[in-house]
Image (cartoon, rainbow, N blue to C red):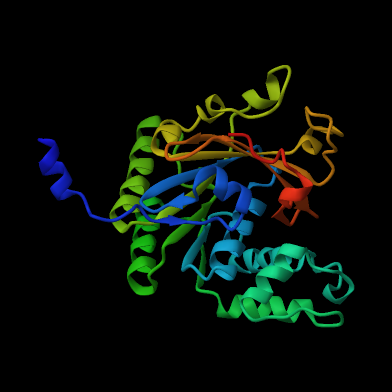
Length: 298
């Protein structure tokens, strides 16, 4: 088709993006793009669910962007508990009135009208934020990809949802590569048709554990999920040296309660690493620019 015809057919507007709420990550990647799939991958226990819940916190609770969280492993109440812990910085084993929430959480709350002062009930503030958030959480272990797509359509039509976070992709993917391709294509087509930013969390192959040298994941470690890399406009990995009992990163900086979000593929922006705090195995939060000028590498 001739170029002028294509220009006439194309919408006269910029592609929509949704910021992740992590300033460093948004600066590097340009944010999540509607109509596209972003994959967050890691080995079990590395923190991909915590990162997914942190995205839910930033996008749905703090920024109030209509967001759906489809949990294929954890129940709705477990996700709510994790979300509350991500906001307060503490699991229920530590009374919320005995801790100080992270600075970015305090700032986020204050921006939308909550003011956390000494002696205030942090948990009560977090619960109030969650009650007012345009967030929908659903869980069902038995559904297939067709039901997932149906739920995405319903949530978009009834609640104007713009972001869908789907935790634990493996729960709906068959071992058969042909069926994997069909399932992933249906998710991609739904994201494009409904103009949704879709975030999928995925496991990685055992090759990460068996190879010698660095355990940092790479795109080839996604090979167990056929075509997942091809259909994702962005692929991020969660990497924590502590997982492998390492005290430091490669640059000799301490690894305690730290993680790298590695952007291995980004069709519409940069790639590189963003270093973050990984607090109490609950949530991810940013390192201020002044504290870490090496947090992004373009």
